[in-house]
Image (cartoon, rainbow, N blue to C red):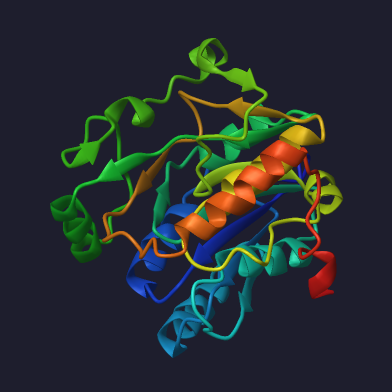
Length: 266
């Protein structure tokens, strides 16, 4: 089903893991409601990722756009900004390339979208053994009771009860960039992610706090918009202390925008 009444862009961030991106794109193709467009935000992957995306472009029912930047280290914030600038719709759903979304994922995000809010979803994790099994089988149909699913409660989908678990908070803490959604106009007003955040950590919280400072609410969604996170080793956290200081400044000074974001890339 193609989504015409609620145009949205799905942004998928990736770096040098085409096997995981393959599973992610397979799951996107199974969505009950397709996004208007899919934008792969690629932080410098080599040819195999580009070749994978090209192979999917021929069979995708909606535009599949590859936004790429040179590999100059971990620059997730910057490639997300470049993808946001490319988005042609008023609403953006954001995941990572190591995510397998439930087939109702886009449908659910449309249902929970609300003006004055940005969405923070949850995630379930897959064990290393389960992840390896999926790479071999290419299977993406997962459920809360599937073997190898951790954080099972986050995999439960009960749409008609989701309003009971949804909460609106004036806090930018505990956000997960692998399952978030925003109105593009809110991102533009905040000037997007901070390009100064290089290396792992807190780019989502830094942006979220600026959105909170601007008067938005974080809407925490459960029992809908289910995703499964493929197992992988954690990235280096050597830059985390620098990011913490930037985050603290946003909170203390109640900043609503960044001086190095979307506009600086145009």
